[in-house]
Image 1 (cartoon, helix red, strand yellow):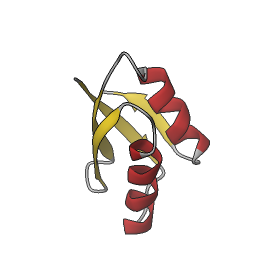
Image 2 (tube, helix red, strand yellow):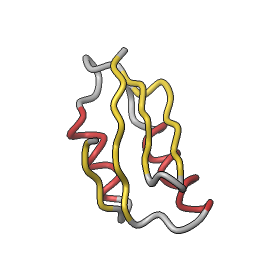
Image 3 (cartoon, one colour):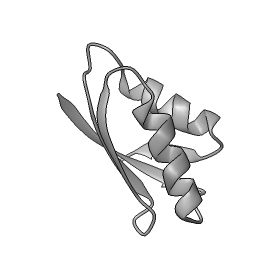
Amino acid sequence: MTTVTLNIDGMTCGGCVKSVTRILSELDGVSHAEVNLEHKSAVVNFDESKVKINQLVDAVEDGGYDVSVA
């Protein structure tokens, strides 16, 4: 398993946290995603043989958020 922290801009409420958590959790290979509104970040545990970091970023960006790798 690999862990990455993503910086996520555009989250404003608990609904955003749920949305980003859902987006990440639905990706094949993601075992856990912990999204934090206060820190505007997500810590994601994933299997790099199934999903790549750029796919995590693209999925969250497709959800309407700005993302960068910490």
